[in-house]
Length: 211
Image (tube, rainbow, N blue to C red):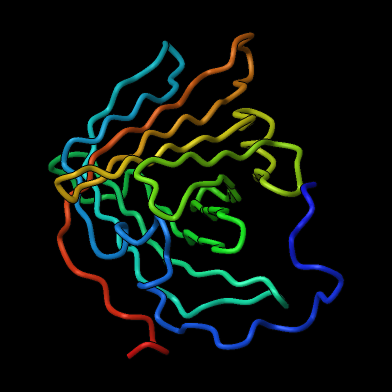
């Protein structure tokens, strides 16, 4: 595990913290708000081979108050992603979690949970003004790991998760996800891909402390 820059005092919280999260999100700042995507593409595994499925989605990313772990300071967005097939109502995919930015180290975190009983913590790094960043998680590590319920762990083992986010000049943004699965009965890994571009549907509210 990489060392941290915080020294021997692991208890004292930073002083004079700027409570305005929207001013301190680094590369995540442009993600804050409500977004819609209408041309998502999902490549998922089926018994007779890969299936390509179109999808539509909404993603809400709302600023939260600054968070501290002793001297560590994090700013973040709480998010909810809701995905359906075109013209349908029932959820095709539902996901909740946090995007977090650590200014002192340039570290990005994404926590995600889905109602198939699976949770992921992905990590990456970027400059504060980056317009493209990548986060990864891997099965078997306690730092940026993947935890699955027994059936998924045995039948559709998630070995790796990777997401690349690109911020576009017109204000939209895209993500490209690659979830690497080891599927029971298949010798080769399966790359479960999800790609979409989001356009703004609503502005973010300031976090409670900043209002």
